[in-house]
Image 1 (cartoon, helix red, strand yellow):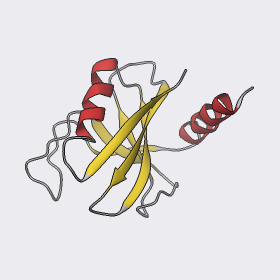
Image 2 (cartoon, rainbow, N blue to C red):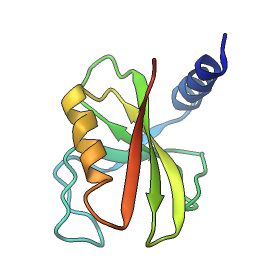
Image 3 (tube, rainbow, N blue to C red):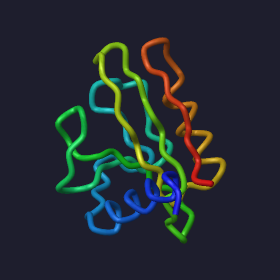
Length: 116
């Protein structure tokens, strides 16, 4: 098994051993930015930690297989931090929405990393 495979095995383990909490369902308005509406369910993995002090963020799509096959690596210039967001069960259209979401402003940029 190569390094890339080991990374995805670790991501799968983290997701499978964590409760997914959707605190911002699709259609919800962002709590601080009233002009932003979530187009894909957004939440976090309970009992995990990320750079912002909360749980590891997840985008959960509508694909019933709920495969974890991509992550977003984000740089936020306003918060001056970076983190990953795990995409779970996202269709190709939902992945594009998530990608665009993290690249809409000059303050946040992200790359989509796909599982090979």
